[in-house]
Amino acid sequence: MTPQDSAAVRRKVTMASAIGNFVEWFDSAAYAVMSATIAALFFPDYDKTAALLATWAIFAGGFIARPLGAAFFGRYGDRLGRNRMLALTILTMSGATFLIGILPTYATVGVAAPVLLFLLRAVQGFSTGGEYTGASAFIVEYAPEGRRARFAAAVPVTVGLASVMGSGVGFLITSTVTTEALQSWGWRIPFLLAAPLGAIGLYLRSKVEDTPVFRSLEKNDAVEPAPLREAVRRCGRQIATLFGYSITNAVGYYLMSSYMIAYMSEELGYTKSQAQLTNVVSMLAYSIACVFAAQASDRFGRRPMLITACAGFVLLPLPAFWLMDSSLAGAMVGMSLLAMLVSVIGTSNVPALVEMFPAKVRSSGSAIGYTAAYVLFGGTAPFAATGLVSATDSAIAPAFYMVVLAAVSLIVVLTSFKETRGLRLDRGVEPVAEHA
Image (cartoon, rainbow, N blue to C red; front, side, top):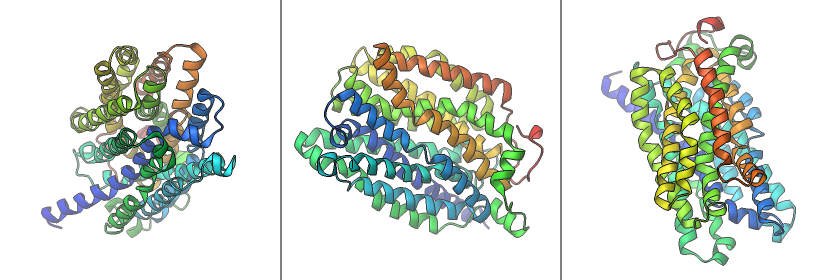
């Protein structure tokens, strides 16, 4: 293969890897933007806080199926191929998101409405269980040596851009249509867009070969027949380490991207349009920062960047929350500060979660550790934050939550994470002590 051919293949791989994440996180942004409207339409109108908590509970409920998805798609990716797995995840995800867009509301079908919403969120969670780590493995296994984080940055960057688009669409809808129109049909638009986006992603992924690493496993008849079991048996320390620092990545991202819109409008008194505009600004800051953070990760290594991010989350959430309560400009600065911290941890986490696992069990091992963190802490972050504010009557309670979890992650990185930047991606299953 000529250098030109290799570059062309990597461009296709980057696009194919990124599009699925775009669909996944566009949905997350759409749900967050429309959370207050969904609360009004899918639950009885007796208590605004209770309805919003129920909405976030269903949001968290979408994470319940993630462990099953991680086990299923991780095993699928290690046995049948990264690319086949990614084609199936995007088909499942976009289909479930589209169906949310055509759901009847509580006024039409009563309690069946939130039940159906929960079930479709569960289907989304099932597909997401393999999507992010699968896309990470796919793109990193194609990346050239010394530039893995820069190539892998396409994954978190598209997460940010999807959130920008989701928030932008929400901002456009809520600021241009009447309340009656928003509750009638406007809230459905972001979810219905998942169908054409998913079709584009499926097409792109069907045009790219599987990774050189997986093709080598197939050629040498070295595919692991029981990757999930082997990952747990041989890579327990890697899984625990990935979980330990990913909890900060998870909480930081979901508070920033999903919770803050409702938080600004319900707790700080900003209009919905102002909250959505602030979210767009912070996600743009996140997307831009990802590019520079990835370059730093390739230059300095994953461990220094993870330490920097976790320490930042210990020190900066309280000032960021105080800024958000000061003025609209302060809110934009505060949210952007948190967003840039998420970019630092995220751009090193993507290559690290691939590098720290041997090729035979990579999809399974990374999916278990990463997904567990997002199930237990990421999906519950908006619910926990809303509950903490209500219980303490303090608008900055979520900041303390972030600080405590970041301190745990910092300890994990300092004591358990060993630098992964130089590890070979085609290595087989080896003793845990050598690649922790």
